[in-house]
Length: 352
Image (tube, rainbow, N blue to C red):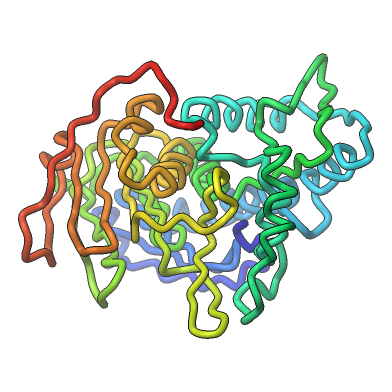
């Protein structure tokens, strides 16, 4: 789960020239345990400064609602589920949970926000998730697998949320960054800003353009310093990546990444990174997680999720691209011919 610390230690670095609105202005601040970069184009200093308050409110609301282990709306929901009780939720929370249910179903539950207890077993629902420790024993994992909770176990009726499966523990690390970016972009648009990028730890959504030029972003190489690829964005697009290189711990020489496969209970291992290009940041975030877990089966899962732009880096160093992603991405560091894999619509799920 994303580390939802809301301490905005911000430094505003508005880049301007004699009041000229035709320059990008940049703001950097810290929230969600990571650096957030905001780039604005075509606005004056006063308008740019006003966005800080709007963004603060947006990220503060996300923090208060979705933190997985500090007191929040989400922990209240999880406590009620564990106690076999129902809980009243507001319409905004219901909308996010409904979106998560749809994404989980379309991903064939490889994106599984109900798997919080599994992440808890692995020590990822804690502030010290990076510390070395033994992995959970197979008995504990098998106990969880015996009653695999999914978002299908969540019921909402007339604003009352409940679940008959007490193994359900919600955690929205698989799309919380995307959700936060979408709400932040909406806050910018309410301020009348139409050309901007919000980048949260390397994942982003861009609206408009950089004057006459598109916003061009780099995609991190999962195994080397520098960029694997670059891509020029069109008007309103999101780019989200999931990889095994950011959150992991090591124990006795073995590396345990934080992206867990709900089918096995262990870290997914058939990819080193997955990058998704999509119009909606929350959907891109969830899809990147699901396709990383899917590994070699990503084209089928991408089809059911309606995702057409995918780049997957394999552990052997090969790069796989969907045909539409091949048209958009420029590989920077790859000596091999990328593998183009068609996304074919399927009707049967890949899960057992």
